Image (cartoon, rainbow, N blue to C red; front, side, top):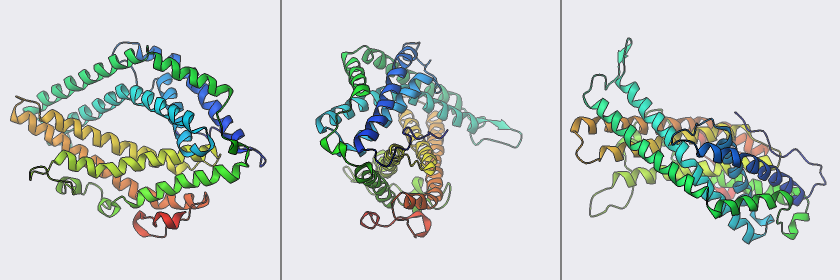
Length: 362
């Protein structure tokens, strides 16, 4: 579902401070309304936090937007207050995202394993009837359930802490007054649009670093054949480190996409294509994380070779999903660039989704 802009278009005479205050007041209000419901959901039994739970979803949405605005428009806020607020919001975001993340990872991995093991009329999966499949499924389920339970316990402990109460107090004060610098009285067009354009420029520069030429075909297997360039430890290449290094620029672009989305919402100029790009990179991140989980499970001591083999197949399956998401990004990016041009960022005329250097996008 596409998020509607959280700030209505203001009059041409609206100041930077008025628009930012209106936006942050709305988001802080959403934070405070969602917090009690989210705490109640987390306080239920482990694993009961559903992906569609309204309180947790609304709270995470508000946290992300407030943090993104404080980052992109940092020059408009009191620096000490903005940095402290971002630190605390990041803490809460990482805390609340853990258990739903494990739930999604469990659903992804167990669903993939079930599909690979299925014996369907149009042809069996490559693991159908494999002796290691049931044991691999039980191992993944057990390890992810344990991780989810630990995350649940951590959340319960932290949600009773003075740190959360202090953050809630900070959001309560934000509803009444936003700590702005003197520049908050300047016309919005003089401050907000340049800073939002800088967020789009950063996105373009990040996308330029992506190896889109290697993602030109779906399921090309590139990531399975090529470990990338990472320092070798004692002459042995660490495959996990290589894949993490390969994924890192894509994860970074996902963050830049979110920041650009939130910045354009503040300016009441949402770019709908950014929403789809965000979903694609979210799928990329979840597949990459699931692959790491499968690889870690395959190194569990004393498991049978058959179980390890099945987990290796699941790992490969998720790495192919990573490549599928990269291919989708490569198709979406060229269509997005004209939208960026309409927001003040020059378009790319390159084929294949590449973007010009950042200096040419300023």
